[in-house]
Picture 1: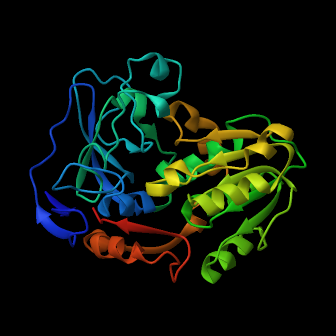
Picture 2: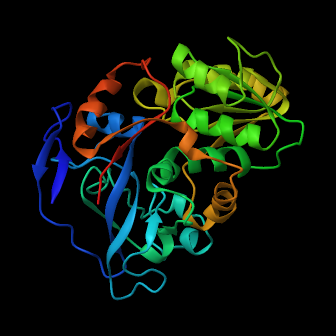
Length: 334
């Protein structure tokens, strides 16, 4: 099959012919119809997140099942599906209690093994990790769900109660930040957004956010959707007493040990929460809102490109302030 491959950290991604994926006994092979380009893919390409080399990136995808292993019971050939970017093993205590996103034996397409910048991709433990798509949700919109949208949904709703009058602060208006804004506004919440990109701010405002430069102790929930020492600290400082900081953006390199204002955390009884995707078991409430039109992930798609162009598009993410807003999705025609 054809795939986008890079041979070394930072090497130019290229279109190559690679062996067909082998279907695991408990897994499935998905014919990729659309796949998102995520900053996490860029981190891996730049060596911030080690991956096996040569490597096929891509972890946000939607498509059709073209092979299933003999132990798979819940899915069949032709099913339209997507999957979380974290694939649980399906057997451990976390998976069986619906918390596959923190499975200690997890697999991640595009990181632990070949990803979705290809004609086909493997999903392991298919009964645990595949999500069936409603007929009303197209492949391009579904490709925006598996990482950034689902991550934002759980970051906002999955770590404790959300007051009806909550003020939500979002730091970073890339894919996950814009997703959080869309979800929060759909829930009727006030959203304040911070980002240096004019294009990102324009899209955030169109989704209902108020664009600000700083937030002073107003937020019930603050989400660092970018991932840096500066944005994490600003997020914590934006919280009112008893507020909740949710760290979604990856903290890599020196930022992995970034200090926080722990005096405020203690004195104001702030909550500090990490959020790592969302298990397939938690998709139904989100998918129901999408199917009913309450949430429209397709609005977050800023550009659609051919799959063959995904490698070049990945390299343009070297710029910390992109010239365009929204999620880029690479589409492959059947």
